[in-house]
Image 1 (tube, one colour):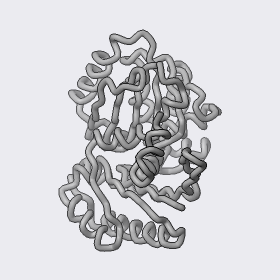
Image 2 (tube, rainbow, N blue to C red; image 1 turned 90 degrees about the vertical axis):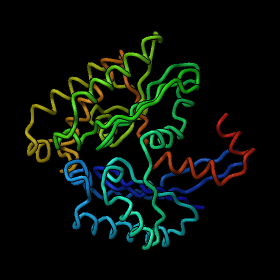
Image 3 (cartoon, rainbow, N blue to C red; image 1 turned 135 degrees about the vertical axis):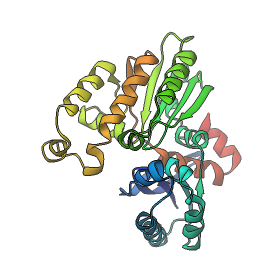
Length: 300
């Protein structure tokens, strides 16, 4: 049995096809195929507040390709979500309708729903239930934050601060101040907080740090990496460091977001499980399409 997840983000569009494994009462998944297309929808959405015709055409073509791949892989269930760029594009719903006509049932989700799906992968259960975690998901258009303590949600919020938005000078100082104030307010009552970072940029930073999956990156280490990366020109980050064109620019503002949140939340280190929205979508599909008793067993 195979499920698929589609994430239409501000920087890239992703398709994850996963093999679902059922072993008695335990249901898990293995990643089979991951396809990533750097459409950069945010460049249009955050400046012009609409997706341009060329990028709209590319998006529809990508969705048709994804539909064909899902058919070839014999995917039985899928879920497709669009985030910040499509939320802000005035023609976002028109594009949703066009994509639906091509065979993909797409939904635009708000920041809170995006955070809920990302964190549905239940990362904290593998790290220790009795601790306090600040989940940080940094995308091209927004940053989603959720604070959990003893597995209970304390607070969550979404802020219009993202890597593409920063590169396009569409981030606002008042939004930065709101995010800093939110983090300071909600973390002040906890002595020790562990950061959990998700998204393509922190995943890449974790690999650059030669960190194994789930191995923490300290604030000092992340700051050192930021200064090192920032010492190279964009061209040299591509040609010398070997970063992809669509990663070499956004990785700098991503560092700035994570460092700011670690500073104001007093996070000494951040754990990077290397998961994202597509992983959360697969888990959401598992929770939805298996029987309730099995679902409860998994989430214990």
